[in-house]
Image (cartoon, rainbow, N blue to C red; front, side):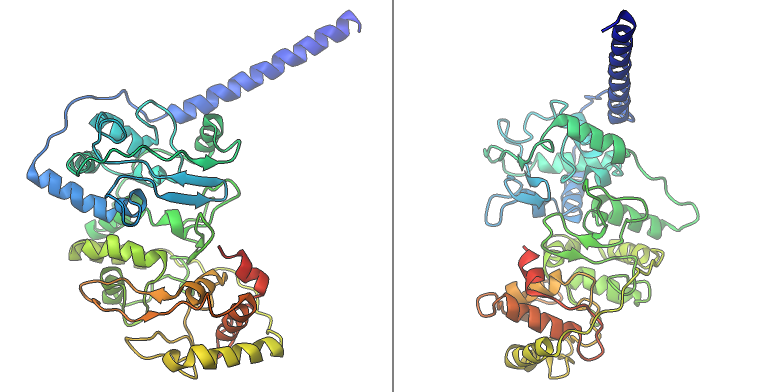
Length: 424
């Protein structure tokens, strides 16, 4: 190799190293922007602050992820399945060895608003800090005060089960540089106090967009995909769009029906089930009437974004015949021969927008696992649907799902046995 060629090789290597160093510097800067030095000033505590923290923890449904069913409250260990592996929620109790016992208020605030652990390591966005970054410092401190008051539980965190390279800090840093924007969203001066409060509850504390938004291949919400609906991280349920009136948008609903659905899990127009039933049970049923009204106002004000839909292809007659027979044997007694249901008891399937969603995952899950509304003060003994997963095989579930989605004027797509198999 000539001297000139060697110089060109070295120059190329130096340029490559410089480019990598520059990109690493940009990524590092993007991961630190907005962070102030930790302020170790002790936070104020009082019965009112403690009560507020308890309320905020319910509004954020912290127990839903940080408590294993039947286990001690906030002790962690519950897994969140994602396309990249399983992330396990940590222990939030004030145990000094395995929980938050030796965390300062400033370190907790940094975790909530910047997604960084006590030792500075980056947290996985399965913990919805992209939403919690909008919390006010006072609310974050109140949560800290409350969590310091719960019974301590010595329970080590379960190691995450993520595949390479998603288990690396480098991958997290790149993800954050691309998709995480820290900081509060200023109140909209053109809207009233209730609307701004509703946005805060829905977008920050409630982190509703974490489920009800479409996600890209890296698990982030692209532009214009917020509230557009999509499969949940474990891909077992479809969280319908809050922007589309054809899915879960409530733009045309009377305000009292939205409040009733959030408070009681049931209204004249709908009943919650699946993961949303957990949200109502653990969280929204405990919120004040004023906060529920504010959330309803904000949700009703989301700009409608009708989603593009392809005409559903009629299923083969053999599938419909099989589905008709299965429906008559297992479903018609409650939901009616014409899918009309029984008002206030069994939901109608004819014209039910939950039945004709683009994804059939929810219909499949309800047939397989059963459907149960949460028990609330306004609906203490809800009617439920038994599971048929041990009675019907994949072909049966596919046929009856297709029949429901394409009968009585419904225009949902056909469901195949492979579709059923794909639903976890």
